Structures are given as C-alpha cells and as structure tokens.
Amino acid sequence: MAAVWSGCSTSFSQELPPHPRGRRGGDGARIHPWSGGAGRDATTRHAEAARTVVVFARGRVRVCRAAAPCVLEPDVAGKEEVGVAVWGMDDEPPVADGHRRHGLRRRPVRPAAVEEGPVAAARSAASASASAAGSKSEVGGSRLHFLEERDEEMLSRRLIKLSQSNKVRSATELFDSMRASGLQPSAHACNSLLACFVRRGSFADAMKVFEFMKGKGMATGHSYTLILKAVATTEGYFAALKMFDEIEESDKKNVDVIVYNTVISVCGRAKDWRQVERLWRRLGENSLSGTLMTYDLLVSTFVQCGQSELAVDAYQEMFKSGIDPSEDILKAIIASCTKEGKWEFALTTFRRMLSAGMKPSIIVFNSIINSLGKAGEDELAFRMYHLLTSSGLKPDQYTWSALLSALYRSGRCWDVLDLFQGIKTKHSALLNNHLYNIALMSCERLGQWEHGLQLLWMMERGGLQISAVSYNHVIGACEVARMPKVALKVYRRMTHRGCSPDTFTHLSVIRACIWGSLWNEVEDILEEVAPDSSVYNTVIHGLCLRGKIRLARKVYTKMRSIGLKPDGKTRSFMLQNLATDY
Image (cartoon, rainbow, N blue to C red; front, top):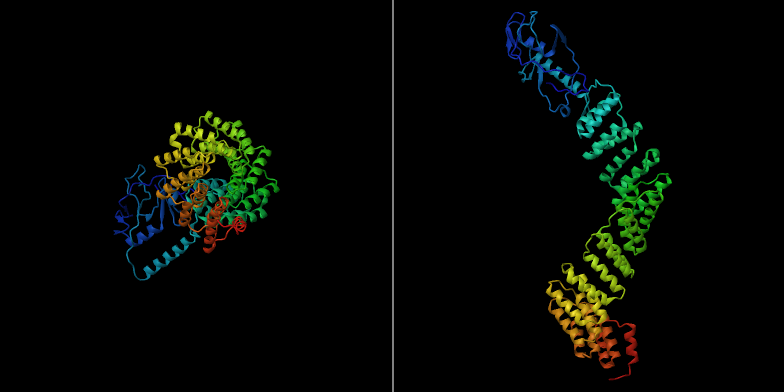
C-alpha cells in the first residue's frame, strides 16, 4: 500500500492489484513496455505509458495526463518509497460483461538506455524542466507540501502531535507548508514546536519560530520561558537577562510570574544574588505576586550566596502573602540562621516545621545543637538531643561533637570527660580525632595530664593519625600541672613519631621547661627551632621573670643578631634589668 501523508492532495485508499506480467494490445499481441513488443512501435507505446495515468471505474477508462504531485513523507509514512513508476496494465480474466478489469501496478524504475541525438536532447530538456519545478517545493532546506486540509485548527493539532513526538523534520515541513499556504498555526502549536527545538538543542530554529510568533503577536509567557532557557543555555545568563529586559519593555502584559521565576532561576544558578534581588523587587513593582517556586528560588539563592538577611526577608514576605513554606525553604532558613548565630530564629522556624507535621532530619538537629552550643545554651542543646532520640533518629559523630563542644564552651570540662567516657563505652565506633581533641582540651584546661596521656595512648592504639594539635593539648596539660619533664617526654615522642611540632608546641614546652628550671633543655629547643620572634620573646619573658637576667641577655643578643625584632615587653624587660648582672 502506498503510504501517503493525509495533508497532501492525492492519496490511495486501497491495496494495489497483484503484479501483472504484461498487457495485450488492440491486435491481441502481448506488449512488454520495457523490452518492446509486437504490434505498434514499442518505444512509442512506452513513452505514452510513461505520460499517462489510467484510472478504471466500473469498466470505463479515464486518462489523467496532468495529475497533481504527491509528496510522500518518510517520517509519517514510516518508510520512503523510492523509484516507483506506472509499469503496465493488468491482464486479468474477463468479467461477466465481457470487459477486462485493469488497474495500476508499481515496480522499481529500471535505468533508461543511453540515447543520442534529438530524442536524447528533448528528454534531457524535459528532465531539467521537471527538476526545476521540483526544486520550487524546497524552502530553506524544508520541503513544502500541497495541503488538501485547510482547517487551521486541525493542522495545528497535527503540528502539536508531531512536535510532542519529537518528529522535528515532519513538524518543520508542516509548519513551513502552513505558512506558505497562508495558514497560521495556533499559539499552542507554535509553542509545541518551539519546545521541540529547545529539547533537541536547535537554537537557531527555535529563534526563527520565536521571531515568527513575535511578528504575529502570538508570543505568550510560555514562549518567553522557553526561549529564555534556550538563550541562557547557549549564550549565558547575561544574554538571557538582556533579552528579558527587552521583552518586559515591549510586551509587559504577557510577562507573568513564571517568566520571572525562569530568569531568577537562571541568575541563581550563576550565583548572581544582586540580579536576583533586583528581579525580586521588580516583581513587586509590576504588581505581581510571587509563588511558592519564587520564594523557594529566592531563599535557596540567598542562602547559597551567604545573604542570610535577604533570605529571612524573602521568608517573612512569603508568610505575609499567605504561602506556606516548603520543607526545603525551612531547612535552608534554619541552616542560614544557625550559621549566622541566630539560634532564636532558628528555633522558631524549627517549631513551625514540627507544627506542620514535618520530620526534621539529623542534619537539622545537628545544626541547631551546634548553634546552641556556640551560644552557651548547653541546656537547650541537650533538650534538642533528647528530642532527636525520641524522634527515632540516632546521634552521629556531628551530634556528639556539638554536645561536647557545648559543654566545653560552658566551662563544664568534667562533664565533657564524663560524656566522652559514655560515648567510648556505648558508641566506640563513632570516636574520631575531633572528639578526642575536645576531651584533650578539657584535660588541658583542668591540668589532667595523666588523663590526657591515657587518651593519647588510646588514640595510638586505635590507629588514629595523631596531629600536632593533640600533642599540644597534652603538653599544655603538663604545663598547667607543672610537669615539665613529662612535657619534654611527650615532645620527644611527638618528634620520634614523625609529627612536626608547630609554634604552639614550642611555646608550650619552653614555658613548661622555664617553670621547671630546665635551662639546658630550653637552650637545646632554641637550637632546634627555626628563628621565630614569638618563641624568643617568650623565652626572654620567662627568663626575666625567673631572674635569669644574664641568660635572658644572651638570648636577646642572639635574637638581634639573626635579625628578629623584640616586642615591647621584651625591650621593657631589657631596660629594667640593664644594670643588673647575675
């Protein structure tokens, strides 16, 4: 069956008859059109058959010598039919009235024999004329079809279906054929074709359709949304922003909140919060009300860009507009407020989250506990912890870190050590360097050098990578407890394990040695460390306070000789003890 697009002027509605072997001429002789035959001249009959289409209806023969062309569309028909021609006439047995039934048959066209002379020239001219006529149906690389259907609504529905099926070629040819026939597709059909081009990344074709819609006054808010997305993807957000300004100036009535949301999203992905704020203000100036998507975009953009004040303003405006916030907005507001230390507003938002029936995640709980701990609200932090466990969530490393930090900042160092012991007993798999360091900080503040050494040994046995910070806390605990020899042992252990001491390590161990009167060790450490003004100033201060003026002068002279500058306190000590000699 010949598959023909329904928009064309000619179509076949039934199967072609079986393939015939030939036909008989008027004198009864069988004629083969391609190879010649008896009776009349075969060449003449072949030319006549090529020019003539014979149609049979109820025994009568009608000849059409000028049939309208019909273009087959492979995208719609399912396959291309190439090299099809009228072959010959059917040779069927006679029917009751004595006539033979004839029909059309199709067969691949065989290559024509090479001809010379006037006949060949005439055929060449006819072929060139036909080729020129055929090229007139090509417009901009797209074939035009003669449309038998003239109903614009019907054709627009076909265009929508083709566009939604991503049949770009067929949709483009139908669109161009409608325009060439003086028919106008509907705005919905044009938007469907525009969306099809945007999906396929055909930016130039999308722009052509958009310009056609603008010229006809058919552009809608959806059209603007589609083309702005395409421009942002192809040419960047700044080009999309420029196009939006032009659209807003020329067709403000069709620029709705969805178009604004599109541009806000484009600028938000580029982290340009200033343009996002400008668009937000213009939205209100044009008497447009934001949607939930609008405020979701505003809050997320401002939070990601560190503009917590603007995020809170957008959040509060949303409430004034009577829009209930989504869970993502509430989480973003809590994260922003806890980061900025606004724990009270974070708690208020958290309560609103619970009243809306939402279940906060472990991340939300941890951020609020951490914020409360930094604010010294350790009691509220533990209330949040109990609410966390009652919600069926399990505390993780960040939860314990926030609770230990809350106790430490409140000066409850013994409670830190007790809580750490409980974590070690019940949740030993969660212990990490950070939790150990918080416990070591408490040991340093309390002067619990033995407990600090025990924790350090546990870290080594557990295979944790011990940093200079951990060693510094233990050396600091020895300094507070006036245990200089233990501090020196920890210092030697540190260097032996390949951990490089920093300035704080040297300052702490030097202070411990000075208060323990280990003068030789002080000089040895000075020889080991790189020239550092803070280390030399600390040594001179300690020596002067312990009455070792001569040694202090020696260190001061060395300090000046290597180009280090003493601080004001060092110079004051040297001036006070200028005439003193020990």
